Length: 336
Ligand code: CP
Ligand code: NVA
Image 1 (tube, helix red, strand yellow):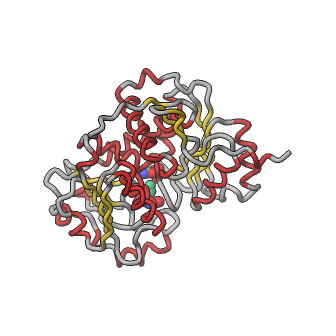
Image 2 (cartoon, rainbow, N blue to C red):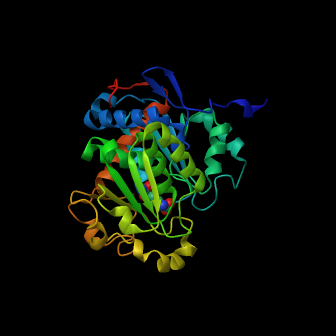
Image 3 (tube, helix red, strand yellow):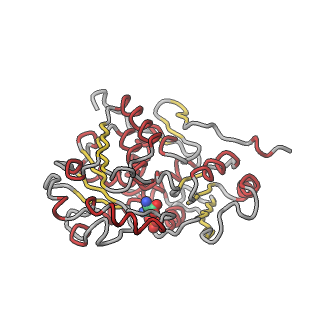
């Protein structure tokens, strides 16, 4: 029997106007503009009325395989799934890569017999793509070297709570052009918001992600700027975001990067160039004294723990969407 033929539709599908469903979340690109909108809308409902969704995923099983460490992602997926009435299992894959013992397709065809959704944190994006190709159940990217879609969705949900109209604000991302920067670019593009990304030469975001974000922005009216000058990026913005200079898997580059990145540190002097109401954002974990100072991390304008909380609400929304529940989107005014 050929087990490899059980694949899901390759693209996110709108079942009919007003209802949105999505087979996997491998990349933010899987959601499209309506999918991003659906996640933020549903996350708002999940946060304001959690009791309504208490049994929404009763009897459903989620398994998480993580090749890299995690605090927030692991616990918010676990808490989120159980608060929807489902069950969560965690497999620590930090000692050996997921497919070290048997092929990815054999693993996928086992998992799809037992569980309803697979959540993966990996090095290679291809591992997540492969799992989604082989498994007949939804697969969620919980961070790869290339993307961190759940993080950026929670970040834009946090900005929406704070500023309401995402089309009217600008976010500056300062630092390494990494997985988080990639997902922020794509999410911003789908939302028609504005982003400036400032990175040192040689550390710019992935060229294909940038090209895709620019292509999406032609349809949504998003503004995307890539720079190398941190002060120019931050000037007048509503939010300043940074992340680790060396991501998980790049530890051996840590010392070299520590020589290159100091001009990109988010400190009081840099953030003074942003709007007075500007918020500070970080996906965490932070390296205090490196990419950000304590003063900025602990300032009144820091929303880092709102971001962390919102991982929970946004991932509940993602689970609900992927496990077969269509979401009716609010009717948009033609002028929105
Ligand atoms: N922000 C984030 O993904 O945190 P963890 O690495 O702790 O999951
Ligand atoms: N860019 C960071 C994000 C951690 C949540 C990393 O990949 O290590």
